[in-house]
Image 1 (tube, rainbow, N blue to C red):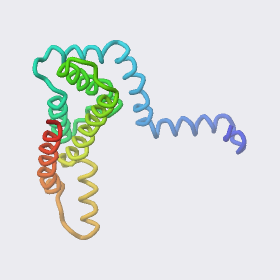
Image 2: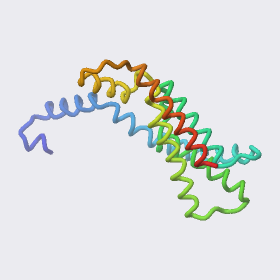
Image 3: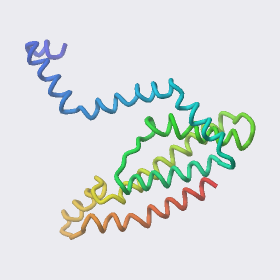
Image 4: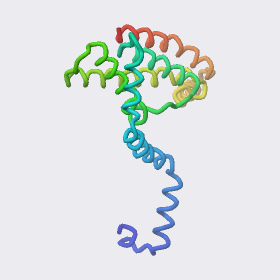
Length: 181
């Protein structure tokens, strides 16, 4: 409608829409993940995750979250994107954490506690992603830091920034594990 009001012909409108779509196709890929997650959930991912956790003896929600934090940081080190909140945490990690808590206490968990567990696993995702991604030399955060230092006429290499990020990532891992105990 906007194109017609601005006196654009139909071919120009279609051309503009097509170019915008192609230029921003990564946004379209993100939109595709939501129906995919819905389909996966519909066909029992949540149920299978819960069943897996119930089979493992002695597993706790804290241990699952600690292992996930470690995996998330290692994935950041290798620049592997394993998803995020909508693609991985909500459909897979949260049901596993909830199942472990239910198995440990052998009863239904209060809604308030369910929300706390959701927030906690989301925090592990944020910690692991935020502090783990700067361990990779080619990460955008590392390159931004290097560019900022260069603009201030300070010579810094991306490898140095990644190495200086390692102690923080280790501290976050330790704090996260303590928080999960």
